[in-house]
Image (cartoon, rainbow, N blue to C red; front, side, top):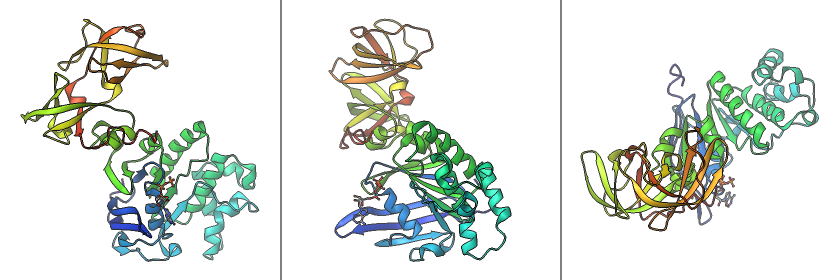
Length: 375
Ligand code: ATP
């Protein structure tokens, strides 16, 4: 994060967008610190592209203000904003060489000698050897890097990326994620990235805003969101979660105690997003420890006995179990393949447990399946 250039944060204040009677973006407050990589993550239709387009100037907010540093840009024309956008469909000029594609913005602004800047940009995106080719002669990943160079050469303060890797196959997308992150760190600009791919957002972003139905559900670092989701939507959309019905018994001493189908479990207060009444006890599959009935489990407390494995999938790095709990619910358990134990077959009676510090507690009024269909 660049400290020297503080004060050029991108700031959205109560920004709202309505299309006729439909509210695509509910009043939204967002601060993207200068020089950080920010991701807007959410399923199709959640309003992330509309938010990005308002920053680009391609949509006008119904209400609210957008500013970069002290300068308000809410109604500024797109080309007058210190903002550039890279789209999924690169939009390169097919008849121009890579060099001329990258030089385009500079030439349009009347810069005569573009050679040095273009050469630097091509080096940044590692395309120096492709300079004289036309876009059609490049791979998808290379074309995307040209689009990036073409935007970056204009020295925007904020670079907007609208699903820029969506058209690439999985392997190339992974490589480009690391590449994009490297470039962002190297140029130190503010990147705002729109994606529906949680892994992509987690790989690259310093901060993620998870959007659902036109609202930000939660904002934080990838680890914060993953380890301590505040809503069922975030718990299910970012990775997987087991959500188990429970009822709060008491609170105090920094923990919330919950009765979960007859088992007393405790949740650290800072991970409890409800502290009375009914609640969902959340635990990630890899945090659940499993052992054949009666064998010791390396987790204090919260032991649950009498579970039965109903499905076993060995996937090499881990084994994924589905276990039926005594109350009938099926939980997902990922066990790392350390070699300490063989794979357990369906039908095996097991005990499960988890360390209380890994559980979280969510509002029982929220839909237990929110965020799962989008996976
Ligand atoms: P996707 O990943 O599919 O692009 P998104 O999260 O980016 O989804 P938006 O494109 O921001 O979603 O759209 C949010 C909602 O606003 C959607 O329900 C969409 O149908 C609606 N919408 C977007 N643009 C318009 C428009 N010009 N007129 C009417 N409704 C629109």
